[in-house]
Every structure is written in C-alpha cells, then in structure tokens.
Length: 218
Picture (cartoon, rainbow, N blue to C red):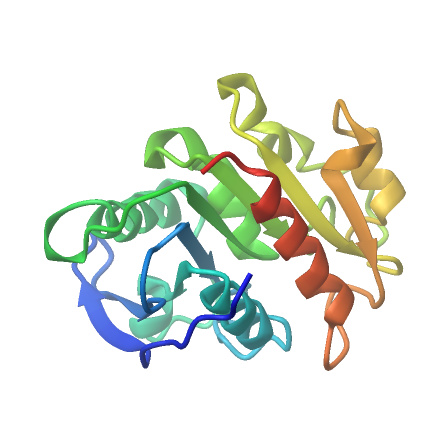
C-alpha cells in the first residue's frame, strides 16, 4: 500500500464528569480505514516510546489515531482514580470521537498502555468498541500473582469484541505466558522485547499492532 501523508495532530478538550480530558487527533490524508484511540498508563504521560511510532505507522496506513490525556491528569492528580470514577470520565472521550464535529468512521479500536489498557478493557462494551488493544496489560502487581486482574482483561470477550495484548517478555506485572493462560486463545497475545516498559525503537510492538489492525474487517 502506498503510504499516505498526514495532517498535523489537532488538540481538543472534552468535558467529562471529572473535568476536561485532552485528545491529540491525527487524521490521514485521503480515505480513512478506521480509528485507534490510545491512552497512557498510571504515569499520566503520552511519552511511552511505542506511542509515537504506532501513531505514525497507522496514520500512514490510513487510520486516524487519537492519543488521549485523561481527565485525572489534567486535574493534576498523581495517580489514576478507582474504576468507578475513571471509567465514567473515559466514556465521553470515546463518544466525542463517534459523534458531532469530531465524528470518525470505520472500525473503532480502543486501547492504552498499562492502566490505560485496563480502562479500555473494562469499558469496551459500553464505549461501543469494535476491538481492544492492550499494551503491557498489568495482570497483577509485581510479585503478587494472586491479585489478578484477569476479569478486567477478559471483559471485552463475552461481547464478541476482539482483544489483542502486546506484552513484554520480562514484564513483572505479568509475563506473556501468564496473560495467555487467562485467555481462550494464545494468539490473543504477542510477546515482544522488554518489560512493563518497551525499549526505544520498539519495532516488534509496532509490527504487532499493525498486524492486529490489519486482521480486522474494514
């Protein structure tokens, strides 16, 4: 496929029950194949090394990519709130991209890094997602496999929503094998280099994301 040139990212804010959230939206030139919405982890930054190359690669392939700073970050909180507060503040962000002047069409993938992956999984059905992309899903706290978040991880599956997890080989929050053990198909997980954070120039991560979005019906 011939790469497409991109427009610059457009920044906008969305009102939520927890205050404004911020979207950085990059659209492709020409026909749009789908939408990927990604958010950050508990550190609250969009500086994870995989986010920029994922965005640039998918935009070249014709996808719109929205990177989201959640409301709790803009409110100055140092840690994400518990799900009963975090999830209601996430849903308006996704809804704003599916309606009104921001309306985007095509398969709608939601996802995120670590804590962002958790909120994407928990809210996949409520947000109307067509698929979920989980980067470094924190299956359990380091050294505490008994404290499992497997129910959150599997939340999209009863609704028929495709899920793919990209997990570092040495992730202390859950190795790829641990994550596979909680899912019905080992193909739902791609093992890549690194731990909970991925190394610079994470070409294997980008390739896994490209393959996953390519597998979805357009």
